[in-house]
Image 1 (tube, rainbow, N blue to C red):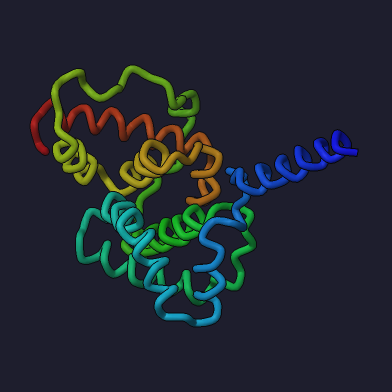
Image 2: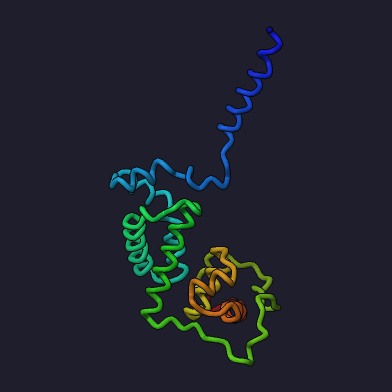
Length: 205
């Protein structure tokens, strides 16, 4: 009688352990209470969501737009979109990734209004790949120097370079975001690396 109770104790313990162990892919559990409160119009929850993600999103805006005032404007507009569209968030990704996509789309739309130039490939560039020898030169550089050099890239180069290297999108995803071919994305990235190397070597930054 006494021995029969032991498996039950172990079973209960294992269930408690399972509940305590967070699922890294359980997107619905990430800031769920904050998200629910934001959906109800709770200003304190909205401020908390903004506090959690605004700095990272501002850095994205600044890398893509290179102007502090423009970056701040797009950041504020993006969070207006976040709160107005939060009811459409389906937890298929982390909330941070969902917010980032809104921010990036707003940055791209802003640049398109200023005639963002993403050059389509010609036959002469059809074999360009993301690999190549145009790496950043092997010299001692500060983060600030690299950021300044990235800001000097033409808009098209800078956007693809930022999305690929800093934000972790692959060329298929970038092609969908920018509505260009994968070959164009790879070409822009390759040219951006070459141009960045020229800027860093010349000391323009």
